Length: 596
Ligand code: F6R
Image 1 (cartoon, rainbow, N blue to C red):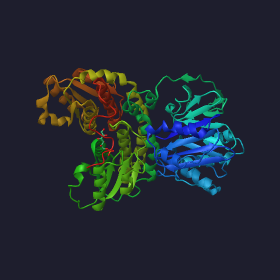
Image 2: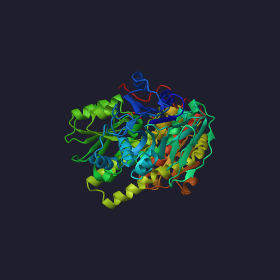
Image 3: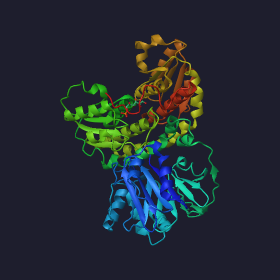
Image 4: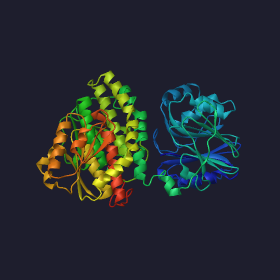
């Protein structure tokens, strides 16, 4: 995601900032910029990699500054949309990570007051909002401005002619680095480790005032906070992974914020119709590859159930062989990277057939966004591990929202049921946190899988594609042969393969499939197959039929794909780890598949 660094001290700030910013390149970004404070604020930014921006950077001098790498979420990747942003008077410069939810409304007010904007970003309103309150004291103006802001942020502000840096945090990380006669601030400790290992983490709601000789932290009531510094003993590489052993595990632990950010950016649009404004189609086709195709299959159940529309889910690589239907459906293309060749080809084919197209993607400005009529962004942040984890869950969230939007717009969902679903969706980050709290139990359950040659994953209904995805995750990173099956299909062939050496992972949720899943488990038991069941908390009955049970928090069955998928991602991860596999870069696979 975006990276922030700030510096105040006796060195040339530009050298420190560029050096530190490069330590954040691994997080992925599309543009970069720097602002150095002197008698005026010197600003330089550009699209592309840091080296691009650096190659045309004038020799800025000064001991105070901020720099940023942007990963576009609001406004396409471009020089104009790169941070930092400067106010109209040139007194203030600011960088920001996060999402300002009420930026449209604030922008309208600020334009009416005469403020001039140069970008399409939500961030730019922050610097103008601070300017609105600025009478010489930047800290006071920042505090006033934050009262008007809805959303999430880690932001850093500098002021002309001052050696102070101000920062604030709400739900986006910030860490202070302590030096002697100099101080630092960054979105990620990795940026600081070449300069200091003494750090103080900023907490939610806090505002920070840094000068070369002093650090003051204020809590949300304005009282000074005294927090002891921590000494970091990690290497820079460990720090990039935030202390996790692999990017994949870090990214699984980022699922709650991926859900939260995807909801924040899009939940209001369900009612307001800011996406899918016009719903003049009577069927939907969802097209994707791999993990995204499994999300598409879950999406089919969701849209059929909530919007009562006929839906099909298709592999992008097969879509081209179909014929144009009489009536043109809405074609939804799902691709986290936005660059998968088969999905791009399907988007072009859908357009050729005259269909309306909507892409769900995680990468702003990716190729798919230029091929379709409408884009729905998941906001999971960049994913570095080759195996899709947090982006898959964010795709599911996007599909819940699209299904709700269609249900409401097509009048198959009432306003009340929409409100109930909104609240239930908002609780999902917490549901996932509880799955992550039990990661050690999932790790222990890998005893059942680690020596297996083949594993079957069984589910029914909306959890059938979830189990296809569980099998894909296991096979791609642990190299164990795994098959996902609709549980009812086992007796039509695969049961022949079951014996004491073939473990089965089965998901059993309390919906109309419950009894049938128990019978399927009994069929496996009768062939001496070992069953690892996944069920809702408190379902003691499962312990009677399975060898081992892993529990997820009890949620209505409609939402069960979310916690179950996260549990299955952990199961694949820990199995691969025990086998010593190259988890973040599995053999023969690439993060972005640009050939068809
Ligand atoms: C598996 C995985 C792949 C991708 C597939 C499509 O973990 O990541 O199966 O889902 O290559 O990629 P996108 O979503 O980028 O189109």
